[in-house]
Image 1 (tube, helix red, strand yellow):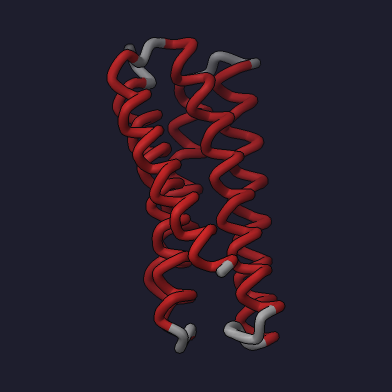
Image 2: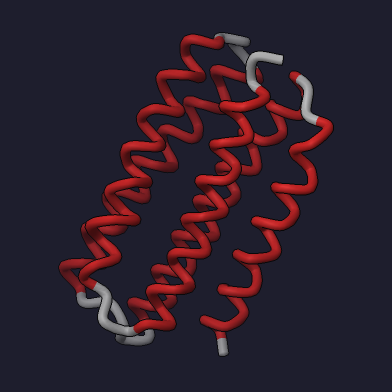
Length: 142
């Protein structure tokens, strides 16, 4: 039941991000940076719940948590680059870091999950993060 809720939450977040991205300006890009951080938190909570339910083994859970922490740290730096320093180069660097970490999570870590529902829930959460990052990249220079 919780996985289904997390999956639907992920899909809803994707829809909200897509719809909100059309009227993006600098202030909106700053909000998207905050949305990226929130999306990482959602993904982390989905993974923790899956681990607590026995769908993700301890070693894989620890690997997920290390990368999710790195992803969250990069998200904090992205937010600071956009909302505080107003640094396009800093934001671009953090977007690259986040995209690399997200690619590893999506391509390598998900392969270790046997339960299809858990894998789908995490894919939806990762898609939400990726959509937000793509919106930041697309609208960041406007």
